[in-house]
Length: 244
Ligand code: ADP
Image (cartoon, rainbow, N blue to C red; front, side, top):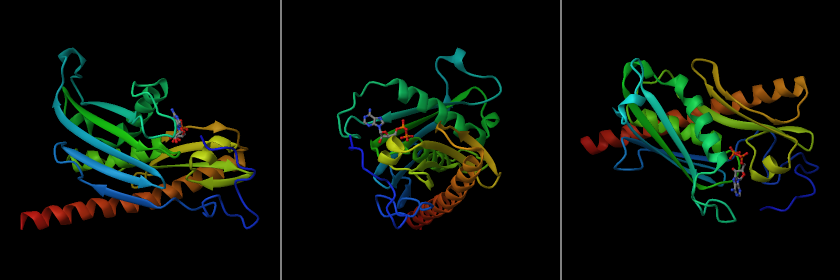
């Protein structure tokens, strides 16, 4: 666990990793990284390293869980035992069960679930290294893995968190800011549809701060969305090259 620093923003207004308040961590995205899954993607966001793999749509067993009018989306968010400083038990924790649910709910509005009645699609998310904001990075990478699996989508979902540290509204909190800061607000957004699919908040913000935070998070999501699109395009270029 990181020890509590005295301050999270220095006299120049910069954060512990040198970022400005409205700056995202460096992001690297790759689509189509696993040969055996129907779709996959990998993201590094700061020190976060997360893999997502998708299987489906496929027949759902046991059959009584199938829905007559739509596909069932199943999501499993899992943190590897070596993803944090103290070994994490590989068994699913309450937190992972909750995050699996909120990630699924953030992705569902983007998918044409009604196109595949009586089927299921599985999304597996493995956090290999965690440093704050893993639910958001997981949504970003899972939506790319779904697109890579060829699942028809209304839009990609991009996500990032925003919060308040040392009285300042900051974008894309890393672990220590998340833990020590005054507030943390993860947000997922579909830029083309201008729709928010996840909004959670931990801590306190005034109504003005809340509005500022949400606008900043949306701006962050728009930047991430552009990176998602570039990563998807790069995937298609490489597939085409292999075919030629
Ligand atoms: P998020 O990753 O979406 O911000 P949380 O706010 O619950 O979700 O967690 C914040 C951060 O706390 C995680 O990104 C991770 O770095 C750290 N963390 C979560 N679970 C553990 C754990 N079991 N042991 C150590 N650190 C953890």
